[in-house]
Amino acid sequence: MVKRIDENKAMPFLRSMNSFDLIVKEISEIRHRKNIDYGSAFLKFYDDFGMMGVLCDLGRKYGRIQNFAKGKELRVSDETIEDTLKDMAIISLNAVYWLRNKRKKLEASE
Image 1 (cartoon, one colour):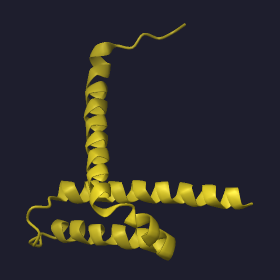
Image 2 (cartoon, one colour):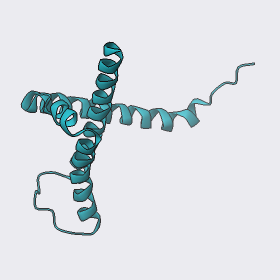
Image 3 (cartoon, one colour):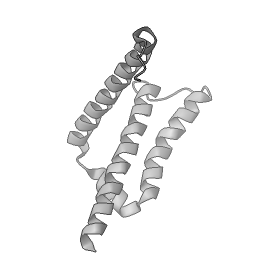
Image 4 (cartoon, helix red, strand yellow):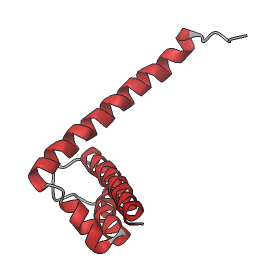
């Protein structure tokens, strides 16, 4: 027997997923624009420095959030904490992309 979903109870979840999907789309668009500006510089950086390069990128952004949480005045006023969190998401996704490419290259060379 298939249990029927109460649509009234499901709606808040569906609305939140729609909001989540919009954020993911926004992050994807930001990544695309940054990729036009920077190219795939992160690939070379991560090839040169490995996961330490990823940690370095994330660490800079983490430090910014940490300063914000401590109530310190942020010098770059046109970059919001939300922007910083989106940048961290992009860095994380770039790292996943880099790891998968690295794995494919290793598998192809075997």
